[in-house]
Length: 173
Image (cartoon, rainbow, N blue to C red; front, side):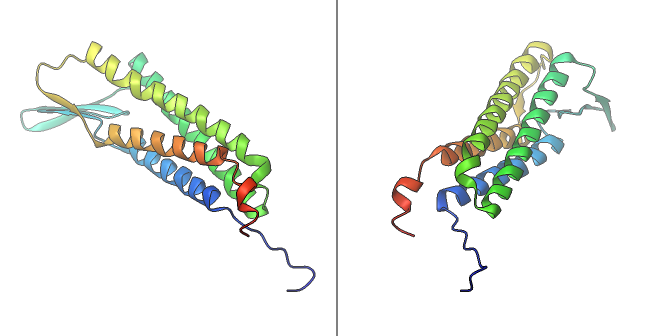
């Protein structure tokens, strides 16, 4: 090892937290573009459009005319932006070896994203049931579930970044 080489030790919890944040970001993107948030017989609702089956053809209209759907979309997009920012800060701090300095900031960002996403994911079914009273059986589909999955991974990443592992891991490395 030469004098100019720098050795960066990455803690396992920090790496797992970064992986959780990356998975949350991927799940969020897929949930945002998902065409299936609510499905029923002859009806499909996503964050962007509402489609109904009338006879032989599907007709789709934008959902951005409803206030509650715009609010849910803005909350989810805000959560994705905050998650992307926290992922980039966590990745850069991991590469530079400054995870101790930035891990609390990233975890606060992630907890903020969790609150935003949770508000959106609670608002969506409440307002859907209130305003879109379908007279048939309807179910919240995989797009909605991916939103909850992303929120859980964000929460896990935030908790892992809050752990003070340097107290007992320094003796191992």
